[in-house]
Length: 334
Image (cartoon, rainbow, N blue to C red; front, side):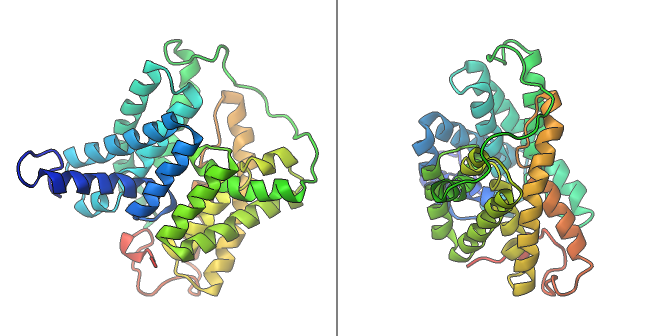
């Protein structure tokens, strides 16, 4: 990889390349190494709030730069694979700790550095079994930070901690067409912790720019997640805010076209996984509540790893051209 900080006649192209890597890091949250898609993701976050967009950009930049300084693989840097966990980590700090605190900004930078190291460890560990790291590094770091934060008054600015025993869901369980439509779009926004349906619409536009096929699979995943939540009687408010569907979007993408080939069997497999992630989401949220934790993308990570490990035993799901699941070369792109 070229040095993005060198001065001289070639510094401008290097800066542009680094900027492209940062944008691809944004898009890699949904498995797509697309600078154009990443740019639209940035627009979506700015629509939610400028602070969120800036935290995400800074996190991706810090994570990418840290990986470069430590000599990470050039292909991973070029395609944005060293930035997306840092993007989510920094954004998580802004959302759950308060964006307008100096302590939050410093913690976001530190977390972006740490998650880059954790990413390398997880990639090496799961690579032994031919499995991808997904957003597991982010989940580990974000869970540790948010659970520990109430113990440090200089970091926690919300009074008492939020740890509580899980309660049974309450509220109307029959969403109307408008709530279902909002939930479908908000499922995309919640991937970045945002509940606004219009943010989800912009993120979906970014997916369409990067890959129409991926956008189609993501839409099916969101529909299955929303439909599963409705069928199981989830509160209409939780369906409408997208919290019941975002893990399903990611699972569907991972299992059809990213780590498994696109075919009828894998699409069906992916949609079963999407429905499973919806149920797993409620389970993880209940387990995390007593310690003040959050589900984050744990349901997506756990469901996808289980389904990918299981796929090794099903020849109709495997791709003969891929020697190892999780190999970037196995990822199908438009």
